[in-house]
Length: 229
Image (cartoon, rainbow, N blue to C red; front, side, top):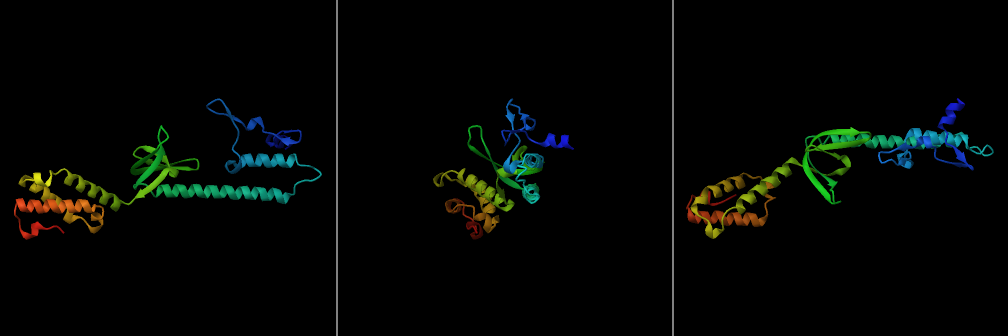
């Protein structure tokens, strides 16, 4: 039992607790990294320090068992909170599978890079949850936005409509040959819901109406075809 206790205890020099070399590990860069401390300390490290504290306490003023129990209880509470946070992150990440998101990362030059795409699947490494978006892995902490499908569809539809309208020649250069294009834009516009139309700028709507009016002058149509909803 004494040997077991000694293997856990840290050495003391001049009455001060010093770092045990057995708690150090060699990293890939060849430097020694000590075990994590503070909020990142694991349970084994905490128990090692607690045993060392018990062994090297002043026999004239020993620490009470109540204080030891209190320290361990505080650490256990912190560990439970960390585990709960990790579980919540994993549940949150899992709920995003199949949804379109925007994640941010740091580029090679230190700039912030935003990536938009669908979450293909979720994985976990230790206590950290990761999202895989378009084949790339991102930490759940990198999540910037979750995009509603209706919003994404409305924005995409508005962008396509505006792009098609801007490809038309000027009003002065408009000819009857573009009637089918104008008619197609009218069908798209009239099929849009009020929510989708909200993502069309007023300038785009005004421009569209001018083109419809100009085409009606070039190619007379029925009253039904002359107006847009």
